Image (cartoon, rainbow, N blue to C red; front, side, top):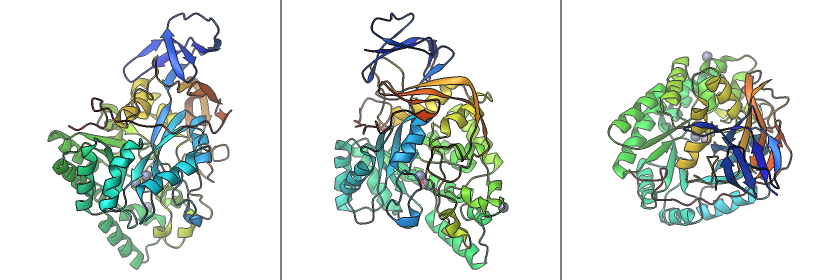
Length: 466
Ligand code: URP
Ligand code: ZN
Ligand code: ZN
Ligand code: ZN
């Protein structure tokens, strides 16, 4: 028994075509015009777009899990449900080890958190928070285990490594054509400025962005890209948020480097004035890098439009306002950093990108799915609606409208930074490997997610060296 999606318009990064799509088991088996019915269940999808399931390449669904009030409000169970309900069929979560533990142990603990709990497919970026011969030896083991991408930090005292260690990690990752992403902020400067404001009694959320100004990010981006130049490694910059950082990327590309840039919806539709919201509500927007100026926002949109920005993922890292964000009521530097967003990305980018005419729907498919799949060795299993690919399909209805609201969201957190935002277009149904898992924003069958084993194809676009 197969399923025939009849009458829709299939969209890829390059084109849109009116095509019927037949699914059998977990795969797309046939595409064409006027496909015959045979034994198929027919779903009429006329008036809708058929988009490849969205991929969120940056989530923290389980950060500090088990560490009391510092653990994220969402976990794999709740976060993946919120994701898939609105069209995200795969997440790449940040697996983050404790100091002293091996990458293997971290992988095992993330598998334990995700397996049997995730409602979307999943894999991980493995975080490297310290560098020693044991960790070095584990890079190849991770790649052999299907984990082809890594994450390092230049800020956060408990996560960051030294420049020389980043360089050594890059050289090792290059040996296997793995992908490295880095959190670019100058950690010393952040510490310095936090200490300065705190000592002056400047303790409200207003001061959060002033401790992490655009130069703090851009300096780290510049340094990271110079180190990558020395190591001859194509690299990813996660959550890039400023004009100055994008200029540094431009310089690296001009000297011939391959650089991938991710930005996030919060840097495209929110800005720094929100830190002055009354009643300590500015704390809701405390994340790193912080929200930026309208000029930065405009530059990022230009990058999204002209290709300087490659992908949009969320950096979903949810903390409740009551009981978590409020820990920093007397001191902004104690507010846990991060915001929810895995649920709202497709509707936000469609509404504020596509319906405003800034980007085409094809470009949205590239930014939220196809180019992420190519970069992270998921393509063509994921990231495209074509024969042979996983039947991860979003039936996108452009005619719906809605309002984002904390009261109705599926994310397990007591606020959303986009409360009251009007949206246009939404996922009418979501297929995950051939199974309809969500309808009209509601999950109809949960915990169907599988680990996606990734394998580097040396000839492929992503994960290659220059
Ligand atoms: O504030 C943020 N973004 N928290 C999550 C960790 C990170 O920096 O990506
Ligand atoms: Zn980060
Ligand atoms: Zn202010
Ligand atoms: Zn992050």
